[in-house]
Image (cartoon, rainbow, N blue to C red; front, side, top):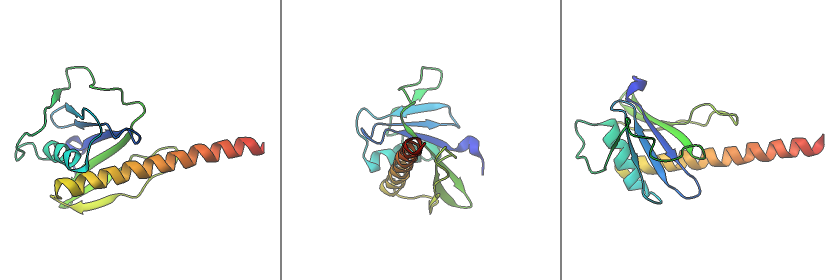
Length: 140
């Protein structure tokens, strides 16, 4: 596993706007509006397989500014290991979510759906964590 070849995905769980960062080539892609699973999967697969991709999405160089504000977006990492594609979230204050394991070359739609599921899980865990913190303050 080479995490320098991983792909970082940032998705706003409310608006479903997405940004994809290809670590290998240091380039960005962003959606103009809500992203569907197919388009998100297409962008991530192009980032994972730059030599075999058809270049269907427009990439922005890392030398340019970050394409969008990433602060309120949920972060997911997609990488390959042992002939599988893994969709994971980094450790966060609300814990570590289960990793989604896919075949090495999943369809665009399946890859995009897995990423959106991981984002939804992250959003739900964050909301639960915030609620639990608020409940703990009330009992003090």
